[in-house]
Image 1 (cartoon, rainbow, N blue to C red):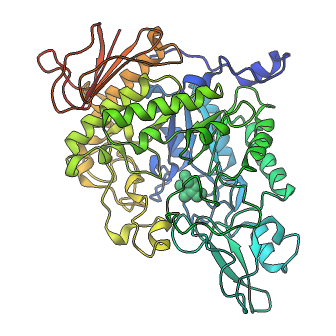
Image 2 (cartoon, rainbow, N blue to C red; image 1 turned 30 degrees about the vertical axis):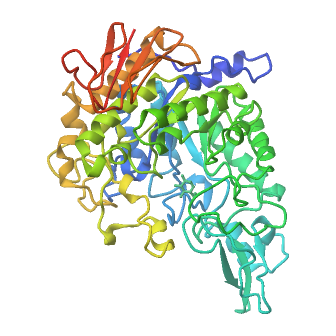
Image 3 (cartoon, rainbow, N blue to C red; image 1 turned 90 degrees about the vertical axis):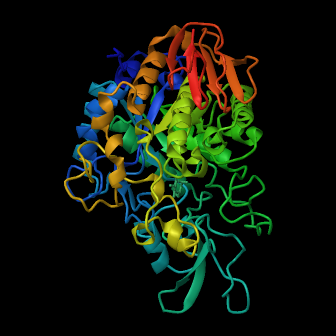
Length: 544
Ligand code: GLC
C-alpha cells in the first residue's frame, strides 16, 4: 500500500505565518479526486438510496483504490427535485443521507485514511422549499424577500408572457409564474434549471453573505474543499436581454446571456477570499464555457483554484480530437498559471464506456475507456474519476417508467436525461442489488448483466478494469517520471498519440484500428496485452 500523509490542515494553519496564496506545492495540484454520487454509491440503511454510513463503510475500498480525495455530490437538505442540486438548507445533512454526526464521522474516518473530503456547493439557486423562497412567495412584489431571487413582471397587457425568452437548461421556459397571496396570477421567477430551482439574485449582498456562512460552516467541520455547481452561472446580465434565437436550448454557448457574465468573476473572488482563510483547501468550479480564453478567466490566481474541464469527456475516441482537447486545455491553464484538470465523465454526461462503444459494442467501449484512463492519469494536473468508472460500468438503458431525472419531464419526455449514468454501483454477489443495498428496490434498477463487473469479481482479477485503475493510480503516485507540468508530443503513427512528461514518462495511445510499434523504453503498464510486441488498437501504454 502507498504511504501518504495528509498533513492536517490544522498543523498547516498553525505553522502559517507567511501570507497565504502560495499553492506551488499544494496537494490538489496532482491529486486523483473520486466523485461519489451519494445516492448510488452504497446504501447501509436499506432504503434503496445510498447514504453517508454507506460511504464510511466503503472507505477501505477507496483507500485500496488509492484516491487522494473524494467529492460528494450534494448531501444537504433537499426535497430532491434534482436529487440534491435543489438545496433547502445548505447547512444541514438531508435525513436521506444521514445527519451531521455521521458526516463528522465520515470526515474523521476519511482523514484517518489520508483521504480528503470535498463537497458540492450550489450557489446559483436554491430549492423552491428553501425558507427564503417560501418567504418570497408570501411577500409581495418589491419586498426584500423577493429581492433574494429574480422576480419580474410578465410582458403583455396581462403580464402573461414571460419576462424574456430564456429557456431552462432542462427544457421549457426558464420562467414560472406564481400566484400572489390573494390568488391572482402574479410575477414570474427565473429558474435556469427546474422550476423547483429558483435562481438567486447575486446582486443582493445577503446572497453572498449566506454562501460564505455556508462555506465556513463546512470548512470549520474539516472539509477540504468544494466543487462549485454552475460556477459559470450566478451573475446575470443587466436588463436580462433575450437570448438569440440561434442558442440551442440545452447547450451552453459563450454568446448565451444566461451564463458566463462578467460579474461572475467578482463573485469568485469573494468565494476565494473565504477559501484563503483555510490553507490547504481548494475549490473546483463546474465551468461549462467553450472558449479556452473564457475558461482561463475562472482560474486566475484570485478566483477558483481549479476549473472542471469537460474537454476529454466530450471528444470522441479520436487521436486528433484528443490532442486538440489536451493542447487547448493546457494552453488555457498555462496562460494564467493554473493547474489543468481532466475527467472522462461525471454524473451529467454519458459514461465513457458507452460513449466509446461503436454501435453499442461494449467490449470495444471498455478497451477504449481503459486506454483513456491511462491517458488521463498520465497528464499533468488533477484527475477526476466518476464513481463506477473504475469498474468499467456502461450507461444503463432504463425503461421509461424508471426515469426520475427532472430533465425527462421538463423536456416534455424528449430527453431521457442522466439517469443512465447514475445507476447504483455493484459491490458483490450474483444478482441485483449486488451488495449496494439490502433491498432489491433500488432507486434506479440495477442490471443483472453487471454480475462480472462487481467490485468483488474484479478485485482479485489482475486484468480487471479495477485492477488497472489501482495499478495506474499507484504508479502515478509513486513514480518520479510523472513529474513536470508539460507534455511533449512525439511523432506517432496515424490515429495514434504519444507524449512525454518532463520527468520521463512516455504515454502512447493507439486510437487506430491497427497494432502499432511502441516508442522505445521500458514498459510500466499497458491497458491491453501487447499483440506480438505491438500496441493493440484501442490500447494505451506507459513507458519510461
Ligand atoms: C450542475 C449539476 C447538475 C445539476 C445542475 C443544476 O450542472 O452538475 O447535476 O442538475 O447543475 O444544479
